[in-house]
Amino acid sequence: MTNGELGVLAKSFNDMGQAIKQREIGLERAKEEWERTFDAISDIITIQDREFRITLANQATCNFLDLRRDEIQGQFCYKLFHNISMPCLGCPTLKTLEDNKTHSAEVVCDRQQEKRNLLFCSSPIFDDEERCIGIVYSAKDLTETKELEIRLQQAQKMEAIGTLAGGIAHDFNNILTPILGYSEMLMDALPEGSQERADEEQVVKAANRAKELVKQILTFSRQTEQERNPVQVHLVIKEALKLMRSSMPANIEIKSSITVGCCQVLADPTQIHQVLMNLCTNAYHAMRESGGVLTVSLSEVDIAPEDYAENIGLQSGRYLRLLVSDTGHGMDKVLVNKIFDPYFTTKKKGEGTGVGLSVVHGIVKSHQGQITVYSEPGHGTEFHVYLPCVEYSQESLVEQQEIPQGQQEKVLVVDDEEAIVQLLGNILRKLCYVVITKSSSTAALETFRDGYQDIDLVVTDMSMPGLSGAELAVELLKIKPGLPIILCTGFSEVIDEEKARAVGFKGFLLKPVLKRQLALVAREALESI
Image (cartoon, rainbow, N blue to C red):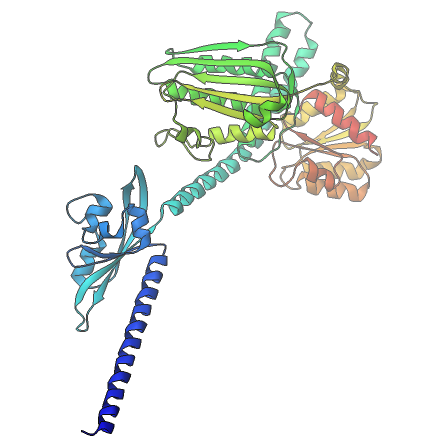
């Protein structure tokens, strides 16, 4: 072989070597790229042999198991994921090995004292002869998805409760209206200081409590906004404690330290009642097995500027502090940090929804207040609620209590409930109005057409057969534009006071109607002309 031929041959070998080297570099780059892609996948992925030994695992697997890659490789998957000595029942890999098809199963794993819902998927790996030589085993963590599903189900339940609450409120308020109205009228007719008047006052008090209960249900279902006025919280607490004492078991002692004459807060008394009841119920659940002491106290405190940054998280000023404590099992810091989360509960299934404390937190924050909790395992729990004090004028309160009288104006009252229409008519007559009552909206419309010139005011129910209150108002205003009309309803999902005034109503009343409310709204509507 000549030198030239040797040179050509050497060049060929050199080119071949370069090609092999470039191919090796390409393969190495492809391998690195595949490994980076493999590790970038957020789902747990392992490659296993036919005996369930893991031959390769991605970074997500290492993170989930909290192990290094070399600690995972060669281990049985069922040992690592479930800490058992054989393939788990329903394992998708068993089915894949039987029919060479992809299978999946949802499994609960215990990892670091926490249950995780995983969707395992098993797919076969084939060689050139279509024989299964291994398994690609992947797992997607569904824990957060499951939690969201549970929250969605709870939200749907709450929505259903809200719808039910609306229907109950409408019917219950219609029932309460004559009870409360006639009780007020009867009490006014009885002499001051008599036993009969005192008895009737208890009926009015009970009816008002039922009225507030309906408002509380609607507030809980987020279907109504509550008015806020200066409230003497110590009276609300004393009333709530009477209820708690009658419902608490004998092994739980209730102690109270209520400072009378504390400042008032701008609040809705029903919501304050709800805060206390939820906190006391929470304390009861912590002590119901072994008993203990429930302590409720109320006092005024001054929050200094330095307290804002270091302790409570409130602006400086004067606050009312409500303390509710128990001697129950207490909580560690992990639980303390979660108790105000919606739907979080430590109670057994069926004993609680996990919304009580989150509702308390929401109410307190909406009142520009703050709630703090102090607890240790075995040493009970303390809740501190801070609400800002407000000043009010005693003179303005007296002015609010005055009941304005009518001036013989003619009023048309419409309601399909005979008891209610008669009650409203009687109240207005005692307030010096001339009253026409109708228990049918269509009959009321005909009456109005015949004598609309003399009618100065209309009070109508919302939900009635035939024409609704809103539809009746439209027809009346066609006949007599500018006519003052008051809408009265037990509950409505489609209209509230703001919407009622926006469409032309001059007043809005929510049943059960009190004499003072009716007098004020009627006078305001007539004077708005």
